[in-house]
Image 1 (cartoon, helix red, strand yellow):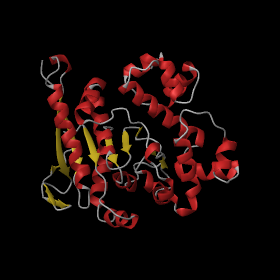
Image 2 (image 1 turned 135 degrees about the vertical axis):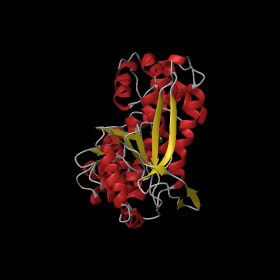
Image 3 (image 1 turned 30 degrees about the vertical axis):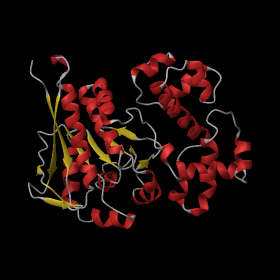
Image 4 (image 1 turned 90 degrees about the horizontal axis):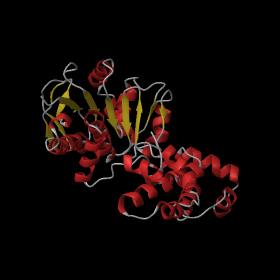
Length: 331
């Protein structure tokens, strides 16, 4: 039985972030090593390579010389767009202005219906090609306000780590290139291979949310320090019940004002934010302990396992099978 080969291209372009371009290739190499140890019927081989619509000319980024192959739409099963190397949003605009050939190539590839995946600020390049209009995506959480103003036709949701909409994938900040590459490993090679690859990488295969990493004051500025105050309070009370009135009192705000500012900054209500954090805690406890479900549920601020199981199912979008089984959930 021949082993299927999956060709995944990483778009190398002037101004791309070198680590964002190289990390997916390393993930695929590790996945290949693990896949080769599996039964013949389960094997898959990933062929990861740098590609460019500018041909096989070297591209220097961050002091490194990238040597891409010419992009071939016909032989590429999925295409990854790495992030843009930038310090400010003005830098992103400057780079985008030079990438007309890349926009044309992305539009051409998207027409195949094969996965087109972007990470961090690379989603801005896909959006600038008009491919995300009317669709959902994510990007690095701190870019959300600028992204929403620059691409008003796109529904940006920075609460999720990876978003899939109609074959167009996107992921959060720089290190989410790991999550994106693992998503592709799972898509083409199965969830077990994805999980094993994540373990070798010593990374969490179940990260579903950017919420625990959001520093709202950096998103909106000092005027939204109220949101950061609310987040700190919620983070310290994952095992306790609370009310919006108590949270608003702590933040010296009305409930209505707090709710509006929190949603504007984080993209979630305080309740939704707390639910996501509790699910992340539950996944960590399930992965690293043998605590009974009643204890895990209690440590996540709930008394009833069934009730928390429903919340877990809602927020844990890419959970391993054992999580579902231990909560008594079904797909």
